Amino acid sequence: VTPAPVREHMRPGPVVVRADAPIAVAVDLLRTRKIRHLPVVDDGGRLVGIVTDRDLRQLVFDPRIQEALGDATLSLAGLTVREVMTWGVVSVRPDADLRAAARLMRERKIGALPVVEDGLVVGILTETDVLAAFETILGDRVTSVRPLDAAPAAGEPYDYGFALRAAAEPEANEGTVD
Amino acid sequence: LSPGEGRAEARRPWLALAAGMLALAGCATAYTQGQADLRGGRPAEARRHFEAALASRPERLDALAGLAVAEYKLGAFDRALPLFERVAREMPRSGDAHLYLALTYLQTRDLARATAAMTEARQLGLPARTAAQIDRALPLLEPGLPEAVRAFVAASLEGDLEWAAEVHDARTAPRAWLEPTWVIHSDSHAIYRHIHGVP
Image 1 (cartoon, helix red, strand yellow):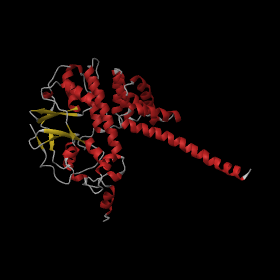
Image 2 (cartoon, each protein chain N blue to C red; image 1 turned 90 degrees about the horizontal axis):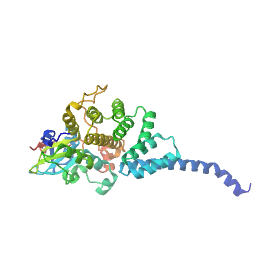
Image 3 (cartoon, rainbow over the protein chains, first blue to last red; image 1 turned 90 degrees about the vertical axis):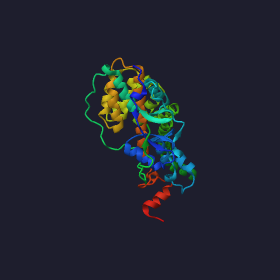
Image 4 (cartoon, rainbow over the protein chains, first blue to last red; image 1 turned 180 degrees about the vertical axis):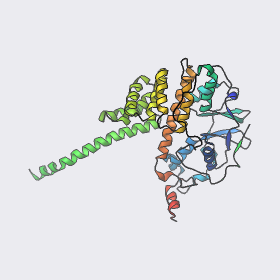
């Protein structure tokens, strides 16, 4: 595989969420944008973590987490993204080699890598992007896309296994950084 | 019969029934434990439990499929392959079984069979996202496939299968944990009160 910088294959200007946003906002962004990974930034747009649909599913369904929350009257809607996100997120630079990024994703079982330059999130590299990049890079060796009977349903929202909707509109916390 | 012997005689059918139920419960427990181990990322323990379930009831396809997945996750592809081949043969409409079979062929570098099994899986009932990822992966499976690409495709599609299983588990979890319409809440009793208007 010919070396290729991540910059050429990432999605620039990804949707991000602020750490102090209610988690309902993150849920709404995941659903409406049909994404599974949401980089979390601070007030200055710097990457501080990542929140995924898996984090939220665990939050809603894991009995241990439910038990840890303790107070039966505590509403999860009162939590912020900061309280559920993964800290110490693995990221790559735009000039990193795509193969190295792909290896990192495979070995660490990471579905998406935020692409960071000078602390700011400038893109995101997902498994889908890597597969598309391999197809581009392999070029002539990829002969054709085989005809298939059924196509994935376009425009349908992803089913994350839970049905959460935000009480508030997300516009105040939604943004892109590039 | 003495009174004591009569009571013992009367208990016999119940004891046999209880023993039978215990045996069935033991099998179900081993299978359930295997599933929990798989979900928890403990394939070695999962293999042991699925083997125990199959020792009691060798015809259980679900336990066989679980054992195949455990072997796959342990990297024992030569052991996983005949298991997945049997599961796919006996469950011809299972997209998961055919996709895992394809991934096992991919791990053993049998690209032709991997392509055939993946194409078969694509025609079956898989989540839209997984189907779309297969569409992206299939054109890559050509002779001379670089090792890095092969490994990434296998890991990515395996991750998709795990994601789909998690979503399925969550969707079929007790409805009490789901919030009613617009609020995420940790208290199922509060949700019940909210839904039913109980103060």
